[in-house]
Amino acid sequence: MNVRDLGALSLCSLALLATTCPASASTSDGPRTSALPAAAGSSAPDFNGDGFSDIAVSATQAVINGHEWAGAIGVLYGSATGVRKENAAVITEASPGVPGTPGYGHGWGEVQGHGDFDGDGFDDLLIRGRKLSKDYQYMVLWGSGSGLSGGTVVPSGEPSMTVSRMGSGRVSVADVNGDGIADIAGNGYRGVAEQTTGGLRTMVGPFSRTTGKPATTKFYGTSDLDDLMANYPAVGDITGDGRADVVTQVVDYNRKITNIVYKGTATGTFVKGNSLPAEWGKPGLWRNGSFGDINADGYQDFVAGTAADTVDDHIGRLNVAYGGPKGFSTTIPAQTYRQSTPGVPGTNQEHDDWAAAVSIGDTDGDGYQDVVIGARNETAADGTRLAGAVTILRGSAKGLTTTGATRITQDTSGVPTTSEYYDVFGEAVSAVDTDNDGRSEVFVGGPGQDHFGGRVWRLPTGPAGVTGTGATSFKLTDLATLTGAVGKAEFGTLLTQ
Image: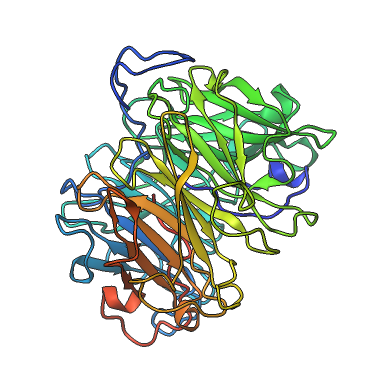
């Protein structure tokens, strides 16, 4: 589950905008006596129910039926041989069963998250677009035996003094109440004008295929109850109880930033958990987030890249916090990594945006999940600016380590194409095992490639980790025959995880 960069927001704006295990393992935070079910939406999607993980790719600027910036989604279905161009699809507002019609500037197809929203056993895909109807809204594309097909708009809600509304930004998909059905969580608000209360809103599944409405909604007013404004909430089961929690930065009315866990409950709302000091990840605000078990202790850990302030000049940092029964681990200290950290490949340079994208997966099959880090603006070895790069740091029993760290660019042997100005290779990253070999392949989005047509690369993995040998790449037009040119589609802007 990923949280994209929304830029710095004023405190008042945060009320209205969203960002939105081994059994019997033991840790110093306490023993795990049994394996718990994974939260819905916390693992890679299987849209067609064949047992292989799939991946969806945003191309929000694609020209569809002559309409510029209309938007599309490419879907790569997994198989015993991984993803293939022959087993792929492109979905747009012109696809059968999808509400609406392509239009100028819709920006349709921005991937939000995935999970089983209606309880039919197939994973579904949540997306958003700038103009799905009169308002900025979300849409579920439904999974089936033949893959994603048809869709339903999810109403955001009409705000009043008693009814909350989802904000207009990114949201996360996970199982907040532990019933096995996917829920939608993110920033929300209640009230109107000066009487607005900001906080965390949950749309609790199952969702209706007819109306798109959830079974119920829940709202936790952080600004009223805690005098805090939640910012960039990321949702995942960090406490290991089978219910997804919110990890979020909060800002108080003195503009002090703190990092807090709000724990999921059986009702779908949240209760306040523990926190980390503001110094973790300072300066700047998170721009994304991902969950996975880096040290294989049975608790999901949380990683996020930081949107650096002007002092850092957008060099970028990776923040790592370990999970435990109270939320953040009380015994394993949180960590921060940069390219200047010993053992991390590369060097700090202005505007690298190192960790602008992050993902977690076991790329070498050793049982510890690794962290994939995108640096979309990394300068190539020959001096080409904004070419991009990807770094992989490995997990271990002691947590994230720089031992065996790997750096991949388009100039790495075996990777198709070469580094060029503004390719932004690493704008999006995703570690997904699409062939069920026990190792997550690494998918990299480079929406600037091919004159902003965009491309996604699949980097193979093995016992030694990620390699360029045998890498493949995909363009939007590789996945389906489309009527007319797709223009500067920026394929690869976002990926499911």
